[in-house]
Image (tube, rainbow, N blue to C red; front, top):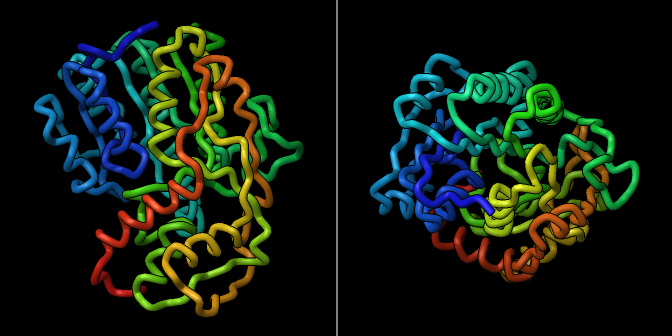
Length: 325
């Protein structure tokens, strides 16, 4: 089993939601240094407050799609391992379709070319369950066809295929993790926000929860800390090299059930705002996590009930006094 202790690690998108939790967990592994590269499109400096206590943390505010910049950074910092989480939000697909697609492909291309040139040793690439689109069969395993619904998802799927092709052609040390619907503290609650932070923010600021469509769409929600722990364990597993691995709970929950649970936690008994179904919305997601169990004996630690409670508690402390949108 390989270790991160003493390694020089680059985390692209490391100031974002999942990225910052990954950085926190990486600190506990005893690396020599952690380099965060983030353009702060949605990332926040305050997400790295705890990580900044680690003297080996360094933050670069720039774009991971710039080949020369990333090459210079990797060489200067003597990077061993890259965790690639740099992307833009799914809902950005409805604002700038081309960029929403290209950002995923361009960053993967930069990192794969540098890995091929032996500028660093290992790439852990973060995909998304959105690459699958609506489930054709459930549970969704890693052999399920890729039928992305949005340009964001198409970019994720394309980047994944590029990673796989580099592995098949050149035998590079790569791993693709494919998380399903992450939630937890620090998830973006502003522009392009997802269901859980939007609902919490609305209720905290006197607004109504928003239900798009009939709410029967399902997702496999996983607490962010379970995702980052699994991702690191997969890096440590030699058997995971070259593979694409789902990270999820293997349980599906209806969107309206999530809103109901948040209303209960926040003691909200008012009405909901009804809106039309979102264009290109996924109908159903339920993951197979058999491969993750086989490789790392993966078992999510956090129940949905406990995870939602912890998430709400964090937003209550963080969003007090924030104006309602």
